[in-house]
Length: 114
Length: 114
Image 1 (tube, rainbow over the protein chains, first blue to last red):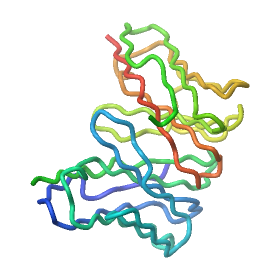
Image 2: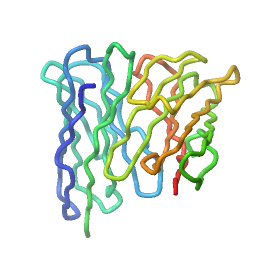
Image 3: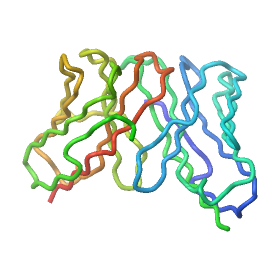
C-alpha cells in the first residue's frame, strides 16, 4: 500500500502567524484528496475535498491547493488563532487492486498560542 | 453531531475474546468506512462498504470481519483479541462511493484489551 505523508509532524506558532503544511500522496491513479481537522476529544471534520489538478479551495482563513501531477497538496492558515489548534489530516484516494481506499496521513499537529 | 452513531463508546475485554462494534451511518449515506487508530499511528483504513457490498479493503487482519446490513448499519467483528488490538475504532459514512464525498465520522469506539 502506497503512503500518504504529511509534514511537518507538529507545528507551534504564535497567534496571528500564517502557516502552511504539506501532504504528499501517490500521483498515479489519483482520484481525490481530502483535508480534515481533528480537535482533541472530537471526531475528524471535513475541510475540503479536491479532485482536479490546480484546484484551490477556501473556507474562511483556511485554504488548500492541489497538484495531482506531482502528488502534493498544501493547506494554508492565514492569521492563526488559538481555536485553530488541532491536528490536520489529509487523505488520498486512488484506484488500486483493493479498490477505492481512502488512506490518511498521520497528520500535522498545530498549536497556536496567544 | 455528525449524525454517525457508534456503539459502544468504550469496551474493555480480555485477550482471546470477541467483540462487535456497531455503526449507524447518517441518514441517506450508503457508504461506510472503518478505521483503526492505535497509539502513535494515524487512521489506518480497514474496510469500505457501499450499499451492502464490500468496495475496498485495507490492512484488515483475518481475525477481523465486517458487514453492512440492508438497513445500512455496519458491524465490525474483532475475534481472538490480542493486546495490540487496543485502539480507537472509527466509523465514517459518506453519501457516495467514488471518493469525492466528504466523510462524516462517528465518535469512535475505544477498545481496551487486557
